[in-house]
Image 1 (cartoon, helix red, strand yellow):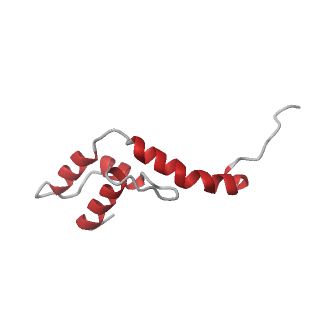
Image 2 (cartoon, helix red, strand yellow):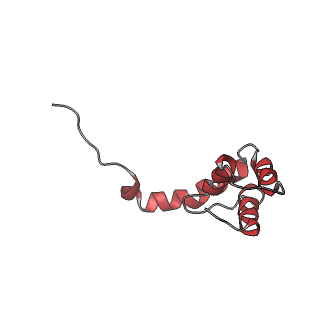
Image 3 (cartoon, helix red, strand yellow):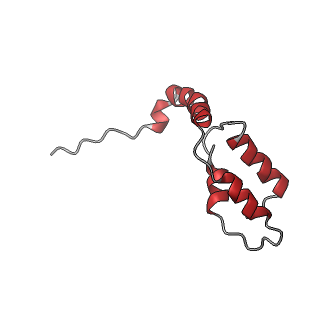
Length: 89
């Protein structure tokens, strides 16, 4: 998958520096950066980006994710909880 360097740098900054949560997928791009293997990285840009991404999970980000997503889950709880199934005979 191709992403422009400027775009992905801004995404990483919004996640790890500004602790901006989204509805779902808040850390998806961070994980993608950490686990990707570049096809080409002639100038070392992606290696540097991965080095920036190697950091502990920010507490502020955790709080932002919960604050943004918890109200949604509370309002639509039936969408996120599995049906109760009885396994008794």
